[in-house]
Image 1: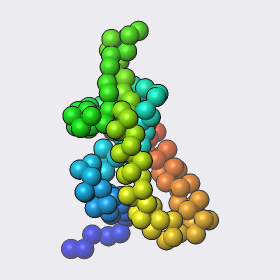
Image 2: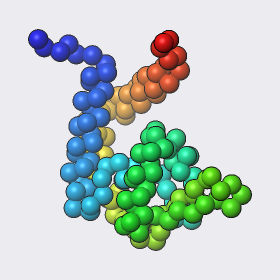
Image 3: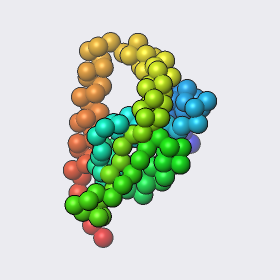
Length: 146
């Protein structure tokens, strides 16, 4: 029985196509697409908390922790305990991490360019608006009752 076209399925297919292409362009660096997203949200001189990074990347804390463990082993990030609150871990890029991040941004430009060239500026604006609307509607959806 064929699966009917639906918004959730189409969003999933689009996301997975983007993830696969990004992974292909990052493959030689040894950095995954998810690690790359974390690197994008980090800066060398400005620490961010792991909790804030999870929020920024729309990831859960356990996923972020696992990604940061791998990035730390590669010496791309540093983590320390926040002095004012020992429960908070701060994260920032090392010099090596900053250098790799810049290089990776160049590596994935073909994926970005393909997306930009597929849509007109008006379509891009509309797509981003619609995706925001979808995200907002699902973020505010009440949980099912037990």
